[in-house]
Amino acid sequence: MSASPLLQRPVLQSDLGRVEDALRESVIADDPFLTQVASHLIAAGGKRVRPAFAITSAATALATMVPVSNEVVMGAVSVELVHLGSLYHDDVMDDATTRRTVESVNARWGNLTAILAGDYLLAKASEIAASLGTEVAGLLAATIGRLCEGQILELQHAFDLDRTEAAYLSSIDGKTASLLGTACRIGGIVANLPRPQIDALTTFGNGFGMAFQIVDDLLDVTSTDEELGKPAGHDLIEGTYTLPVIRTLAAGGTAADELTALLRRLQPNDGSIDPVDDPEALVAARNLLRSSPAVADSLAVARSYVEAGQKALAPFAGSEAATALEEAAEHLLGTVNAAG
Picture (spheres, rainbow, N blue to C red):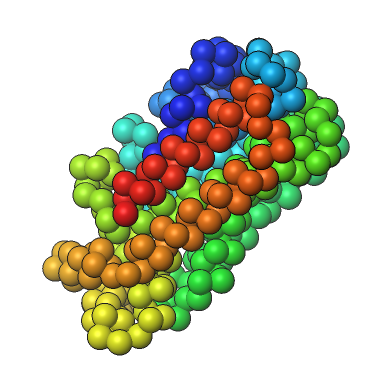
């Protein structure tokens, strides 16, 4: 998934080039080793969706997109550094060996180095945010807190067959949607947009982020390894029970009973946290979920978040930047429809 129509705009591509340069410069440390580790995922590339949202949001007051100010670029950099820092930590928690087709930091240099490097990226993000004013600094700090809250909430419900839909939505609101909403909000704040417009952009970013995570979770159930570019069914193996699982279990009946039995086969039962190797149970669980009405129901929830974001942007229709954000939302909806 990506916000590809948004990213294809020439003006934005140029601004994202400026973001790329600033990202590399922002993590240079006195210690060459720290610079190497902190730069590892920056060099690996990425879609830079969050910086793209910050930059495009800043331009929504203009009829036509033009290169943004250096302050907007640095706001975009601060958001991306938070995202990158969270990836370093995620890979430690998941014991991941690769990220963006390259060796993960934890696999190459160890968990302790990865954790400290992730902390360093968060610190650099906070330093940049502070240079943009107290509101941006406070907003980014609060967002880092929400990322942690969302991830902790997910960990609390690992392998929890009674996980509620409300707990799931609260978790993804923190771990995914909050940073996309903050990206849009920082773009608006640094560009000195009117408060109603900043609030509308924040609503759009949050809605997009909620839908993005729901769709990503659905694809883990419905797509193949080849389509995902990584092993499918990872959430089921890790005990992260997402919306289609939660809705299937909540519906009760034979499907719920069968899914419960399959998920229990995938749960560690010796007090360890090591994934259980039961390919047969994993395939059966994914097949059951793919044929469940819960997939269509979950898609409808994702659509509702996208549409809420689009509605928030409606008063600012007409500018090239607002149109670009609308197109990004339509592209996500198209991904949702394709998945269904």
